[in-house]
Amino acid sequence: MNINKTSSRIIRNFTHLLFSNVLILILPFIYYPYLIKTIGTENYGSVIYTQSIYLLLSIIIQFGFSISATKEVSLNRNNKYRLSTIFFSIALIKLVLFLIITIISLFVLFLISINTSIDTKLHLSCLIYLIGDLFFVNWFFQGIEKMFFVSLGTLIYKLSLLACVFIFIGKSNDYILYTLIFSLCYIIGNFSLFILSIIKFKLYTFTFQKSLFLNLITDSWQFFLSRLSSVFVERFNILLLGYSNEKQYVAFYDLAIKLVGIAQLPFNLFNQAFYPNATREKNTKQVYNIIKLLSLLAIFGIILTFISAPYIISLYVGESMIQSASIINILIIGILINVPSHFVGNCLLAPFGLSKEFKNSVVYSTLLYTPIVIALYLANQLTVYTLSIAYIFYLIIILIYRVYIWKMYLKKNENQYLNL
Image 1: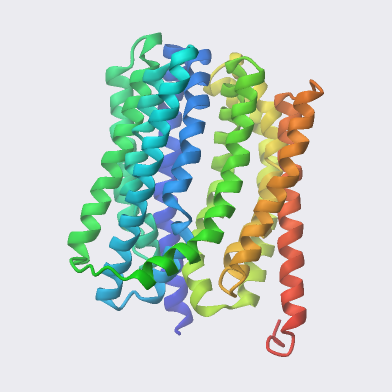
Image 2: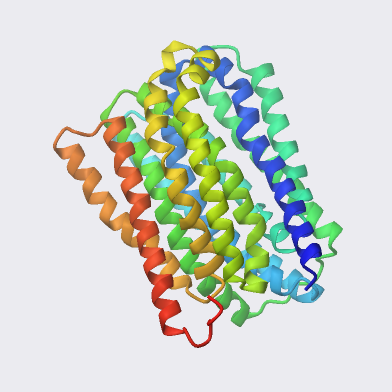
C-alpha cells in the first residue's frame, strides 16, 4: 500500500475526528458558566449524577460495536451487500437491547417511586437519551474512513444544544428542561447520521443471517465488557461522590473530567483515526514509534496543565469551582498512562486477535479497583481526591496487564515477528 496515501487518509480522518470531538468538548464549555450560574452547582451536580446512571445503560445498547463493527466495516468496505447487512443487523441488535433496558428501567423507577422520593421527571428525561443510541453509527463512518460525516452530525447536535440552552434555560428549576433538551439534541444528531448513511451509501439490502448475528454479538462481547468496565469506573466514581457527599463535589469532579478530557482528546482521536489502518496493516513498529512520540507530547501537556489549571478555572467559571484544579492535577497524569495503554490495546492486542485479553485488562482492573473504593467509603476516607488517586492506580493496572500480555504474545510468536 502506498505510504503517502495511507498517511494522508489517517491525517484526514484524524482532522475530521478532531473537529467533531472538539465540538463535543468545547461547545459545552461555551454555555457551561451560564448553566452553572443559572441552575446552580447543586442542581447541575444532580443532573450529572442522574445522567451517570443512564450513560452506563447507554454502553449496553452500544455493545462494543465502536471497535468490533468498525473492524467488520473496514474489512468489507468494498462489499455493498455485506456492508448493508452488517449495518441493519447491528441496528436490530441495538433495538432489542433498547427495548429490554427501557422496560426494566421503567419498572425499577416505578418500584422506587412508590416508597421513596425520587425526581422521576429528571430520570425520564435522561432515559430518553438512550433513543439516540439506536441511531449512533459513528462506527460505520470510522470503518469506511469517512469521518467528515461524523463531524457533520456532531455539528448539528452540539449547535442545536448550544442554541437551546441560551434560548430556553433561564432559571434554577430549568435543570430538568436542560436534561430533556440534551437528550433530544443527541437523538436528532444521531438520527440525521443514521438516515444519511442509508441514503448516501445506498444501504438498502438486509437479509437476516443468524450466523452474522451471532458473530457480531460474539465479536463485540469482549469489547463491550471492556468498555462497560471502563465507563463503570468513571460513572461509579460520580455515583459514589453524589451518594456520600454534597452534589457540588460531583460538579467539581465533572469539571475536572471535562478539562482533562480536552487534554486527552488529541491522543484519543489519533488512536481512533489510526485504528482502521492498524487493523489492516498490523505494522507493530509503526505503533511503537507513535507511542514514543505521543508520550513525549503527553509529558509536555501535563506540565502545561499543572501550571495553568488554577488560572483557567478562575477565569472560566470563577473561584467557586477552584477545587477542581487540585483534582485536575491528579487526573491529568492519566494521559501519560493512557497513551501507551490505548495504543497497545486498540492497535496491537485487538488487531492481533487478542480481544479477550483486551477485555480482561479492564475487567480485572475494575474488579481490583471496586473493593478498594468501597473500602475507602466504609473507612470514611472517600473524598474527591482519594477517589482520583485510586482512578490513576486503576489506569496503571490496565497498562501493566496489556503490556504483559503483548510481551507474552511476542515471545510465543517470536519466529513469526522477527522484525519486532
